[in-house]
Image 1: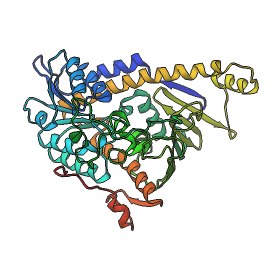
Image 2: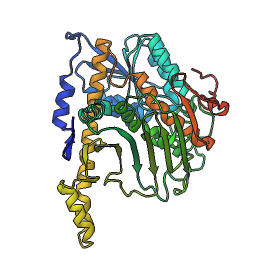
Image 3: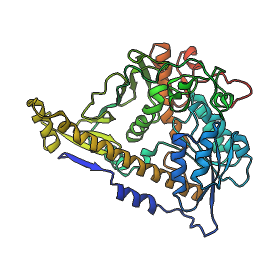
Image 4: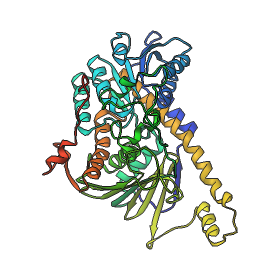
Length: 454
């Protein structure tokens, strides 16, 4: 495909919904063929998953599990009281009538629960990132394959129609030779961030020891809990594993690669005055055999790049492609300059020349695009769940099969290793080892608090 004009493709909510609903499997279920689901980890994202699984006509959510009674109660209410609640995931996995497990726990729990679920004969939908450490991911892949389990990772962009179209365009040479890719997330959390909290009393109904699980034992601290676990090394990997996993999944898919050749990262906690351990300012450089990829994240300034606070840009010899969850744009090279045909860009140029243009007028379109992205993300997630359920029935590999998820998660893990060591590392993705660096290789895994192991 030769790109010769600026295009803008959006993921139509109605169109993507039709795609999701119209997906067919080789097995046409009868009226008594039900898929019984157990949800493990039913906080905010977990209940979002539960909601979308309950939209599937052949699915019954029969069990929910969470270490916090508050979350369990909300999840049971979503099933009109029909689901059985559990505090310990092992009790849920013991149920013979559960076909599928949905895992939306903090990252450090993904590997132990997924491995146990596969051993118990369950298919699994697991949130990203796949693993908390890179070698966990390989063990998860091996276990799923050994037990012939269908596993989908929650990188729902893989099921977005416009992502699929953009990837096909890139793979078919529509941008020319791509030698540079850039990904980013920009926001402003200053100055408080996630706050500063001293150790305190464990909330009523919370099993804090079970929440920590294989992580080191520490007193309860409010901002280590719920969403903010992402910013503590014991449970997650900061922005690299939280958001870069999504972006790099698209990069590696579009560029048809499984891992970088080298990784380097620089990052510090420079802005926010809170308890987090992971950087609030981060730059990552990956060298692949045919291109360079960078990821930038900052929490102290939200000024957008290309008027977007997050996204991925592919730079080709013939054109540049930008993509986020609301759609993609192709910007052709014309005599070394971009065409300026889109009225939005013309308005922005005029606004830059005329400081009297109200700021709210300049930002209104950005807000509407952000609102659209929320709706499009929901549709992509529903399509992703639909794809998984169809594969549970057909036994085909899903859009974000566990091995693909492992490769997409591995690159951010490598970046974090490079960050902690303060040096570039060289990666042998075929043998999954860091070349010539014993200290770095030790960081591919971790110690588990007894009695937990994988």
